[in-house]
Length: 151
Image (cartoon, rainbow, N blue to C red; front, side, top):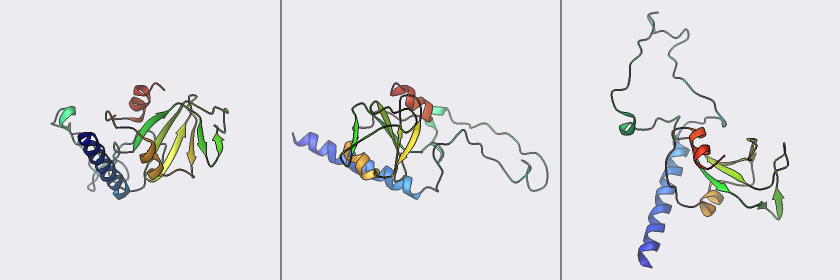
């Protein structure tokens, strides 16, 4: 019994540390496509020579994720989402259940089964943390996470 409470307390502490890390990162609008790191205007160096491509020397499983990869957390929410006594439905297709909730910075985005993404201003990271389960894995891209969740 006490071991489980300690594990939950440590998990919440880890979630808070991740949330603080995400708050410290610069604002990146969501949803985002693939991003590329570009040098100065024109794609070259300051001297006008083309930039050299350098492969990472570490294998992928030893690399530290970049800021672009630490976008947020996601979870499935299969039942209807009730906010302030109102059942939330997708504005595009009318779906009211089987959501993927994405917590990005202090915002919660809703994604229906059809792939429509909507910001829900009445929800925040604190609500997400109260309703989310344990994180079971990290995903390098949004598409990998959606695939893992069955969307």
